[in-house]
Image (cartoon, rainbow, N blue to C red; front, side, top):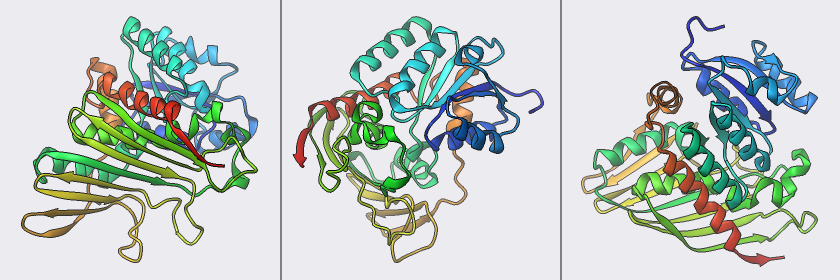
Length: 339
């Protein structure tokens, strides 16, 4: 137990491995993990082994009605995350969801309504920005004017499928939200953040099942064209990372400015430097590689501060919801390609 923790938090739903990153970023701030509820005994056993300090709750209600807990954290099956978040807010608690925070526009509309009524925080942990040191450094550079005014972002989110290890819900579009609604949440968040857009629209979107006819509910490719009041964006996501790559995906972000550009190679620099968090800055003077090893990841502490002070330093509520809305609309209106 942490002595005099800033906040106490509990977990409902641990269906995605991202829950470990969400919990760890809070523990790094000194927050106290109180309890966990999960319906799956195997997932719960693994979680309890990692975090023995978490009491195993008998129900969601037990956690929701604990007056000592300020924050609920979830990486439940995507279609369940909004329901948990709405319940948390109605019980006077703030909420941090794994992405995607929603799988339908109806869920988003309800969360927006309840958030406005309760004044609670509904935060989505867009970990490709919040938990990636090179992306955090890119944000610092853009804010300092290193590449002038941002014109466009290009976000690439390839993933390795690992289909034999995937749970049943992974292949059911109504439960995982579609490839754009799911994976592209990260890239939509980064598009809004780096362009400074506070309003945006989906210009075009496409999805496909090119290579997995045995799983008709799976989207294995998607792309999106966005236009915002601060710039434009292109997103491509897929499940085609080959086994020859030593990481799960060669995720990249390119930020084009009037005076230069930044490329972030989040997980790997193929045939180049070892490790992750690679950032390249090209401006009017030079091409530079920037070491991001000393970057502090601020999201966890910012969220704690927002919970305590009722502020919006980690991410504005409207940004959180708008990033979700963009991918939900892009998924819903996407032209279907392939099989």
